[in-house]
Image (cartoon, rainbow, N blue to C red):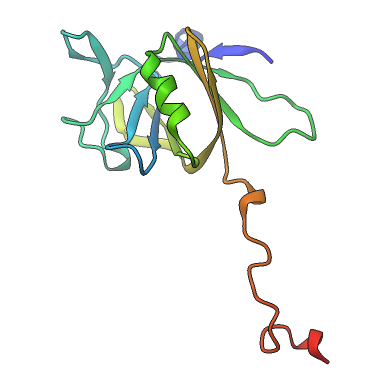
Length: 174
């Protein structure tokens, strides 16, 4: 599996366009006070002390002035083409704070992750979005945190959804 920097797209597309694609992520869980908002582009300087960059967008109900998407060094592991492997996206956050790993380990049920792709010069215009994905795994070390996300696992659905009563399944009671 090869790893590709998400921001490497800027250099790759520079010969044909000045537009930069930005991935915005929102991670939400009932135990969080507010959703975690992340961006893959240092669109603008948010503060000098501490030095922080990010993207201001109104995507997913965020207030651009008060709730910016914070810039993180992110890369992705390209999915393999194996047939028996479930479809999942993997985001790798580099040079992270230890508090991120502590937060990821504190969840007892799955957080919800939503992702949108916008252009850096128009962050309120959504090019494509994926809402309601579930975090299916996370791991980390001193230098990076890996987050795997996918659709809600079908294995967690309740089966059977209906009760086998005479009214619902009359063919069983003949």
